[in-house]
Amino acid sequence: MACVVLMLAADTGRRGEATNASIGYSVPEHVKIDPELRKRANQILFRHCATAAVITGLIAVLGAPYALGLIDADISTAELVIAAGMAGVAAFIALLGLERIKQL
Image 1: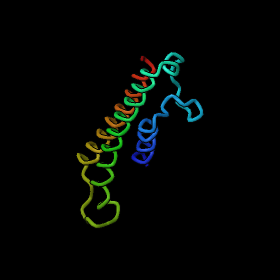
Image 2: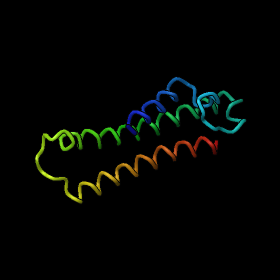
Image 3: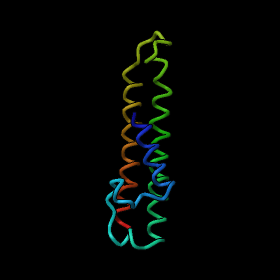
């Protein structure tokens, strides 16, 4: 689910709508006015959300065989900790992009 949401956010940046208030992204007023800052905000949103989407997609791909019952082994605690760590990194990367846009 997180992968899909992050892909949609990355697509928003790719389409150049990161500063569109109707979509719900909160950006400073000077970023909305300056075309160069708008372009930079869209690039930041795309890059960070696409990276986070790849990480969460990797978690889903690696966990799918377990979830579908294709692998009969139990998931070890270490594997769960690694998956949780990867999810935390993905969340940090996505939030970092949004914070960078606010600081433009």
